[in-house]
Image (cartoon, rainbow, N blue to C red; front, side):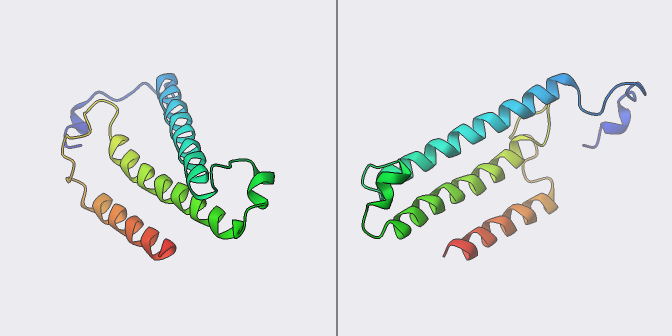
Length: 122
């Protein structure tokens, strides 16, 4: 941020991560976890003939392949969600669309993460 040096310094006794930042980070993690678990359950229901319990899935023919497909869906969703979260987490006080492509190194990291994702799952 080009205006960071114009702001007054924080007091020495102020923590680096304030309480509202902790709340934001914990809520962000909880929402992300809930969404990915929900995606995994939906993927299990899709690939494992409507079953989500381990004992029932083990009775299915070729259950290893079906579990792998459901886990792959959850993994892809997690990587995409983390890449999107990287854009959302750039600033606590500016909207996501503010200078979206301004950080070239971040763009490289997101592209590399997507390439690695597809290399890993394809």
